[in-house]
Image (cartoon, rainbow, N blue to C red; front, top):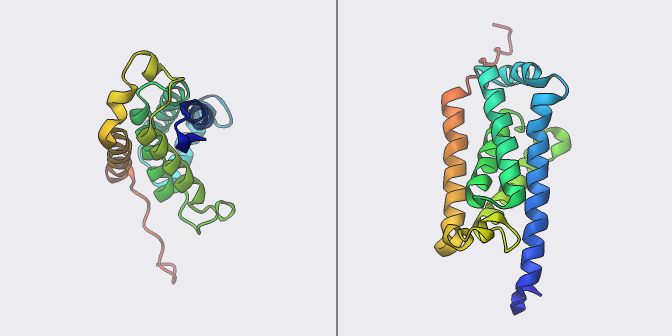
Length: 178
């Protein structure tokens, strides 16, 4: 019972959340680099979403996903790793998941849940079973809402900044074809 002061449960919960989120994020980046259409295919897809230049953005997304995925999974610089995940989700919500709410209609529910999961991990900290705890920085990164602010503000700023600089979709054609 976490609420009654048993820190062990908190540490287990944070370990599971970090590892699941981190490995999932890592696999998204790995897929962009090594599977399917690889970076070239990802670059073409990104170009179609208006993320230009596509190759640069494919590498930036894949690198962020791989790096932040590993950092989250091992609990190192946790609020910054969470910020990377949030930034990726902000970009994904604007470029690819704009349909309806539901994921099966290419909606934004997945990116919202994943983004808030990252924010929660960044805010609460990685728990004792993390490299942040081992090297003694876990408490410094999360006290006084620092983790929540780092994850949220840095993540939103990175995502919005990426969109401002790189998102240049083609204008939609007029209904009459002109």
